[in-house]
Length: 313
Image (cartoon, rainbow, N blue to C red):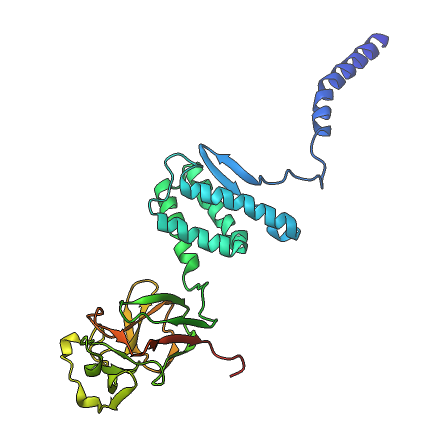
């Protein structure tokens, strides 16, 4: 009886020793509610490809968000410039310029954009996507983000003087739907000739409208009817349908897709059809013989004044 009891005790001890490691392992199991490791943030290697894992910008304070965006932008531009991943680089510098304009001008764009970028970059590092496809998408992002944006509206006054002896001048940027009143100097002291004869008494003078107004020398000028001077159509200048010598304006679409011309004359109310540039000239092809009216050293001039709409009008 005693012998069987001792054997039973020994058997129980052996079983306890065998079960002890299993119990120990169970104790090491993660407790419910324990915090998981946070996801990586910042530059991380996915395979052999360097990617940028974005932080949660929504949970950041203003200062921390600015710093995080700055760090992210440094990575993004390095990726575009080819300093992050070997062999991965934008081919066109214009693509880099667009990317800089988008993110430096509006850094808040990074908050959402970085998440999409990380997924695409991660797919390349994991061998699930081609680096060439990722580069094609990435290099077009600046242009896509900048589409429709305009940072230089014509919302200020502009004052200058026209040089009647040169072609297009004063290339000014405008945004779509910008409105402006453009004025030039009138009859009182804005007369000039576009066919200087070398003899003041035989010169014919016009104003910004391109209409002959007087002939003669100094202050002894005779009135002239508009039909007094005939100008061959081919010599009228870059805008042949407008009066010869008149002040004209050229609008060039920012994307280079088209160009339009306008008669400024004494006054033009203008609304920009798209983002682009405006420049000005007198409607002529030969500028060397253009000359301002001169009364004993008191020389006329041709002013160019641009006014944006007054607020509330």
